[in-house]
Image 1: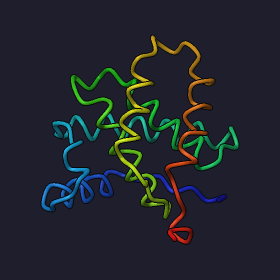
Image 2: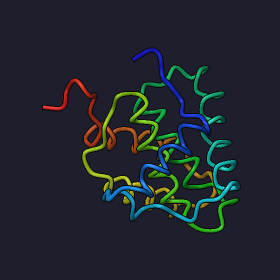
Image 3: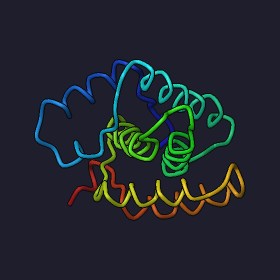
Length: 143
């Protein structure tokens, strides 16, 4: 998949609005969301977008990087892991990928949060990317 799409602020706002209005399982993962939340999460997604183009990453590696960056972003007072899950789900949707088990994403975010600082970031992101291959599927592979 050569052309990776990154969600923008409008994508996030529409997605969150849909989740808030509907009866979706993933709704329970929503953290407190305000304008600052959008700013912080978008800064993480844009960082990944700006740096990943030089790294030749596949969709799983980019997804892992987004989950890592948002989950580790300490500007969010609370809800870093949940914000990581929401960001990854939206990222996957705009790229025609789906998550089989959002709770599994939450467990991956917990693994990330347990690490101190950036110690072994690349190794951890690589392991997370391998795990994501078992929970992400392309929309055409939905069978």
